Amino acid sequence: MRLKVLGAYGASDAEHNLTGYLLDDWFAVDAGTLTSKLSFAQQSRIQAVFITHPHADHIRDLPHLIHNRFSQNTGMLTIFAARDVMDLLSKNVFNGIVWPDFSVLTSPFTGKPAVQYRVMTAGKKITFNDIGLTAVPVDHNIPASGVIVELNGQAITFTGDTGPTSEIWKRTNKTDNVVAVVTEASFPNDQQLLADESAHLSPQTFGDELKKISVDAPVYASHRKIPFERDIESQIKNLRDRRARVLLEKNYTL
Ligand SMILES: [Zn+2]
Ligand SMILES: [Zn+2]
Image (cartoon, rainbow, N blue to C red; front, side, top):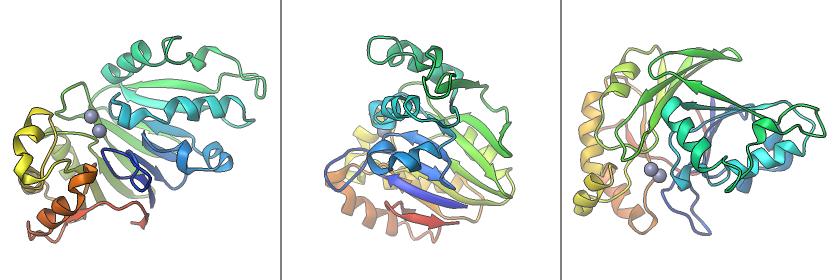
């Protein structure tokens, strides 16, 4: 599969982008960065987005993606999220104040709504366009679920933001042909307290998580905070686990 990393940071400036990933150009995970890095035509090819949690750095571009779809003659966009995450999105974002609920508005171009929401039950695998999707809760400071995506005989796990966790590793370890794991390391080791309090990982706790992962595949640290990106990178290297690496904003072929 092809993994296009549109944003691999937990903050943004002119050269760093918020979390957003695209698989085979049509399935997105998180929406911190989507519209800001994709042409209108590229956006029209996205068929679905899975949202890990409603923090602003993971949904910044979502209202704009939906709005752009409303103005395009293309297929419906499906938004996947675990039930508790979807409830928060409905209540706090698509509430008619921050942004309209486009699932009840008819696009003049297609005669149908531009978007539909699909709530996922934690731990229950569903199929969408021949891919398998399993939402698995992680340990962040608001409701959050990662996702295991099974596509063309390969699997990839995205945790989104998380502190030390376990369920998603158990599911990942039982999944066939995992080709990559994308998790996080937000703060350097000397800010472990802040990492713990905000339910994030540092390279040190990323290293502890690695021990729970039995698959032989690269495990990427995403969501670095910009001022510490070099420290985090060297601390990830110092773990001396050949699977451990930082995620870069580029295209990966897995
Ligand atoms: Zn985040
Ligand atoms: Zn978060």
